[in-house]
Structures are given as structure tokens and as C-alpha cells.
Image (cartoon, rainbow, N blue to C red; front, top):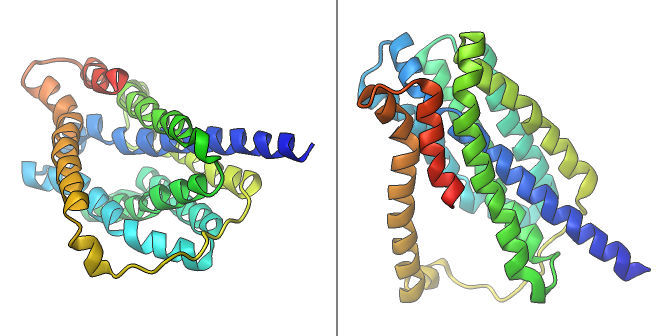
Length: 258
């Protein structure tokens, strides 16, 4: 009976993390079709418009290592729930109070800070929950949520904006499932603290040639991918004269194939 309960819990964890990635990516990519609209409203230059997405990614990347350290120290569930809730608050503030370019940057950055803790907390929990023999399949299922959310964010942002004639509405609507996911994790997940293993100096990690080569390859692939996804909607609108909705759908093809 215990094994059945454990198996059921594993299924819930995989489903919850897949859905969590879908929401995080929908939050992130809903911004991209709105960049042209936001730029026109605040009379921004191309560099200023690009700084909006940079505010998100800089904070998102900066939180990866601290979030992992906090998860080891205070518990992965506590970090995941609190930071996911913060990302939802960032979305809510973006939808409610982005009255200027400066406040928009701040709220997008807050969302990035909250979202930045998801990767280390989610995968740390997965690695300590899923049996060794199913880790590959489990990771593939969880990662599929990224592509699902990417496609949803790009495809839905345009129609929502056109329906309400307000670029803030996609963020306001997506804030609801984001905040609810924090509640889901609070209910579903058990508090897990990764076992204390052998301590490796940070300098040893930086000197690991294979690890650095992998990081370099990942950087190149992700740089190209996110450049296409981020600026694809604006390109299709400006250079090809497509509507906001169609531009988002065209860009979402990248996610569908992924």
C-alpha cells in the first residue's frame, strides 16, 4: 500500500511541475507580443524596449544559484512556494500598476526574481523524489510544460489584448493561475531537504572543462532561441505587416516543434 501511495505522489509531483513550467513560460512569453504596443504607449526606443525583457532575464538568471543555496538550507518547498508566489505578485502588479516605464521595469524584474527560483527548486525536488530508473522520462514530461506554456503565452496574449484593448490584461489574467500554482505546491509537495553530500569548491566547478563546454553550448543555443522567440512577434508585425494575433501564432511554431 505504501508503494502505491509513493507512486501516486510521484505522479502528482511530475504533473505539478509540468504545469508549473507551463505557467512560468506563459507568463514570460505573453510579454513578447506586447513589446511593440508597450513601446508605442511609452514612446520607447528599441534599446529601452529590449531592457524590459532584459530586466526579467537578468533577475531570473541571478536568482538561480542563491535559490539553490536557500533550498538546501531552508527547504526546497518553502523556497518554491514563496518565490512562485512572488512571481505571481509581480505579474499582478504589472497588470494593475504599470503606469510608467520605470514601474513596468520594476514589476517585470520582481516577476523574474520569483520565477528564477523555480528551476533549482523544482528539479531539486524532482531529483529527490523520482526513482532513478524513471528520471529521464520524468524530466522529459516536466520539460514539455515549457513548450506548452511558451506556445500558450505567444498565442493568447494578442487575442486577450485585442479583446480588452489593454496590454495589461494578459498579465492580469495570467497572475491568477500563477498565484494559484503557489497554493498547489503548498498542498501537494512534501518538504524535502537534499542530503548533504561531498562539498566541492566553487573554483573546481569553474575549472571543469566538460561542464564549461556544456554551459557554452547551452548559452549559444538558448541565445538564438530566445532572440527568435522574444523579437519574433515584433518582427512579424513591423517587417511583415502581420496582425498581433498571427504574429504570436507564427512565433509559437518554435514552441510547437520543441
